[in-house]
Structure formats: C-alpha cells, structure tokens
Image 1 (cartoon, one colour):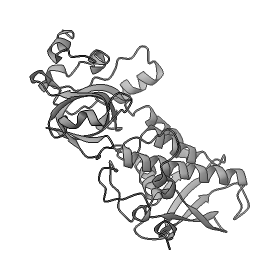
Image 2 (image 1 turned 120 degrees about the horizontal axis):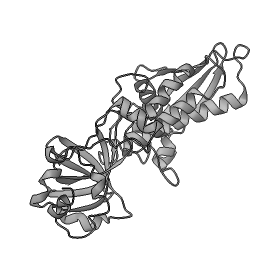
Image 3 (image 1 turned 45 degrees about the horizontal axis):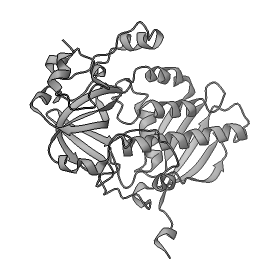
Image 4 (image 1 turned 135 degrees about the horizontal axis):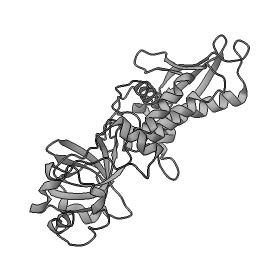
Length: 331
C-alpha cells in the first residue's frame, strides 16, 4: 500500500439537530444540506485561523486542508435528528506535519480534528469574556451560518464527540443576535510600524516572529510587496516592519502582514511596543452605527505616540526617509 493510500484514523461525532419542526427523526433535505455546509465552513475557517492567523483564503484549498475536512457521514439516527460524522485526526493527515512549527500559528494536538477547532471557536464565542483566540470575523460568520441553517425558531445544534479527547459544542439559534454583535466589536485590521528582532520560522514560506519586549508577534510577508530572498540578511537581527496588524476581539495583536521590512535604526526605538487597540464597547458600537462621525481607536506605539494613529505613516515610508523625519510630520 502506498503511503497516500493508507486509511486515515478518524474520530466520530454525533451532530444533533434538536427542536426541528418535523416528525421525529426527519429533516428536510435543504435544511440538512445547509446545516452540514455550515458545520464544514465553521471547521474550515477555524482551522485556517489556527494555522495561518487568517481564516479566509483565496484560490484553491491546500491539499492538507482538503484532507482535514474529509468528513464522512456514517449514519442518520432517529430521535432528535442525529448524524454520525467521522473526521480525520490532524496528526494523521498527509501533507500536514504537526511537528512542523512553521505551519501553525496556534498548534493543535495530534488528536484534534478540524471539527474540534470549530467546536472550540463555537464555544468561545458564546463566552462573554472570550479573548478571541479561536475566532475572527470569518469564523463568526460561519458560526452564524450554522445557527441559522435551519429556519425554525428554537433549533439547537449539538456536536458530541464519541471519544473523550474530542471537543463538542451546543449552539442555540436564539443566541445568533448576541453572536452577531461580536462582529462589531472585533477591531478592524490597522496599519502599524513595529520594531523588534526578526526571526524566520517559515523556511522560505515567508513566516516570521517579531520578538518584542512585550512578547512575540507572529507575522507573514505580503508577497505582493516583499521577496523572502531579499530579507535573508535581516533574519535574526533587529528590524522594523511596516504592515497590517490583525487583532483578536480583546484588542491583542494576532498577526502582522508585512509590506516592508528594513534594518533597525536608532530612531526606530519608539516602535518597539506590541501593537494593541483599546476596546471600548460604546465607541465600537458608535463606529458601526455612524462610522463617518466616530474617531478611530488609538493604537499603542509607545508612550510618546499612544494617541497617534499609525495609519498616518501608511504609504509615506516607501523610500529611505529616516523615521525621525516621518515622526516630525506628526508634530
């Protein structure tokens, strides 16, 4: 048997739909299709987020993601309509080496499946104190798609692992309005300038860690603007990164997508602070209702620039101007 032909070890789950407006054990085909598609989309988005820091992706799915989403429905049971679904363990997916640290932003267990990652996101988003480790806007939209898949009030969706190692969730359709509110509270990506030690972790894939006093900031290169080969002299050294930072719902930075990287200079010390945004529910709600009247949430660029929007620098640093000259424009 060829390695690619070996069967995957799969975990089994019960996917239950309770409160349907149907006879016991029955479900309309269109409702079933929508529910299954939404479940797969939730798992896909959560898995992409854990792997790359961004839940969306353009073009064809990579082979490892297709394999991770290779679910099999093995039975439809009576009672509260329940489907048995088998999902491959991530540790057994070909083209997906969990020991390869450069692939995963948040490395899962070898026992995890993509359904487990989707379940963590679905459970976290229903917590009022959720930091946003497992979800972003796209993951939230996928969860909302699941909650509204069956157009019957009072429907409850449950994922129940048959193995103790698995992760489950319960999602009531009635909670969708509260979940939708979280969409408005996730900070939008913002332009930042950040300086720290640049460590390559992607082995040519354009993945890196920017080491700062406040911790490490994962990043990846925007290949439209940067060629990884041109950056080899900077690996392991102090560097200054201009890019777009993506945030968690608690305002902490999740990822920076770099559009320019240069050697660190003395004036770059002001950028040696972890990017963050201040979360204020009232401000964010106002921004959603009246974006033209609301002011941007201030980013943190060090004590001297705490109330300066780094977007001012966006597009003004393509050449060799010293940072000092750019900062002088902010006075």
